[in-house]
Length: 203
Image (tube, rainbow, N blue to C red; front, top):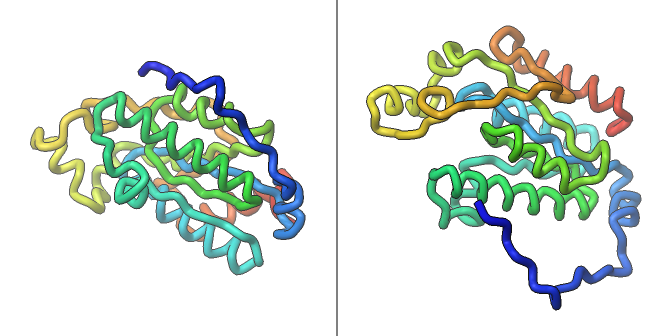
């Protein structure tokens, strides 16, 4: 996909209220928690449960979900390789703005390619992008098949379906690697909270 050319007359405007000010008002460190994994791995489920825990602890959060953004922000995009990349680019830019607002952003997308996830990481300061690999084997995801997508993909009704006829590139060194096929939801959330505390993202 060709890079979007920026008009040289478009200049970023620095506002008086800064990212640091907004973070201090919320008494938290902004971060983007990027949940990646196969369809059915449990990305939205884990992210949602973690967000509930963070909210109960008094943190300001927002959860970006793959299906939800396609109702509005990305409703004009299809599922070609180019459109999928543009989908991730838009979400990355949105997550960056939300982090600039001082939020803890939880982003749940298959995002199958390492280059696209790196593209989002590069938008953010060092340490502000936390890759969370919801690591469930294909056979587990296909057995769950909560939306019936694998069944349709196997029947040829959904072309280029990740894990079936389109490649998923697993993270090589994610900050959090969740064995989603082996542990309970509570255990996976506890693992996330432990790492976030170790990284001093939460108290």
